Length: 528
Image (cartoon, rainbow, N blue to C red; front, top):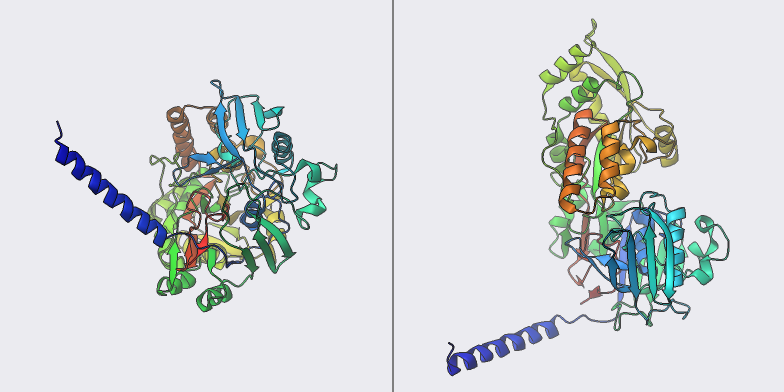
């Protein structure tokens, strides 16, 4: 039993700790006001993330539009527009209980009708068709309750309610019958309920956002203004960061830029905040075209590629190797996958077994490799490396450049390729970002579908089961088997985890630390 003096001593110690904590909090208290300038190489066509995927649109969209939930660094959903929520025991009904004090930028209240309208709008218009495919309807029993009814359990439904994927649109504006994908209010006079209001959008130049004084989280946001400055030259953006014209520079991957920022004491650098995006660099094979329809040829190429060279030399040591379709930071990543360490002897043996003998010039076959324009490190440089490296096993490679992204996308979507480098995102849950690449039902003439023409009935079955399984352990087991099969069939040779980093001034505090990083509201960000 504790004595009286022990009790008093412990109380005094607790009081001292509390006082110290209060002092620390006061010293670190957010400073309101100021302008945060974010540099970006990404060019948004418009600002409505309900009908457009990608980081270019999502960065401003998540400031303009609030979502039902947001996710923390542990992949756990947190309240946002929804104060609380429940999933039914059969996992087919999600009930969202909305805040009663949220209003849109034009002063009209956010209601369950807006949420219902937005869910169905995203289902019908967003490119991620699997994200809300099971949702059949949304009931609104009262103005602050939205009930999503699903045809089957949907384990990704809570993640799908997060900022980058589920902006809540005002029905009184977007429900006017116009095509949402080309709605004029996607770019001008945009109205949401997020922490910032659109002041100006100059396509290809900048997005200017100002503090929304009636934001539902009282006292936030701390900043007066957020400006997204657009410049395709990342080096020029870095100069702006060093000069103080820019305070935050996300999505940086170029080794020269990362090295330069790392050596600058005035700058901080983090690779956190990209777990949800799950960006992978890979070499995709057209499995419907000879000789790449033979798995031995695909595996031979994989054995000839030195991932260590790509990560160390081409990526300056900032990237890490990728060995499967699900990024290692995902809760569903498996370790038991087939890997392809550099082994030129094994590569040649496989090509011999496949019947591709060397001719008098030491050549077995000729292939082309395309690359997505926009990143020399992940695209052009890897393609050029493949040309020299695959020559060692008798494969002549022609590097085919595309003048712009639409040309490359048309070639790949139309299956007019042998091999191509690519950058593809997991988008949080495999249902959203992974299934699309491997389902035989998704072999379509659209970029970032199953453009490899890969078909395996067992993979289809596993993904279908995993897409409705709500027990996490069983779901992990299904995805583990899927990953093992896919790495053996090898429609794609996984190269690296894209080394995305955020560079920022040390004066900036409170950047979002959840799995979506800067694809999250900046309501807690401030400048000291």
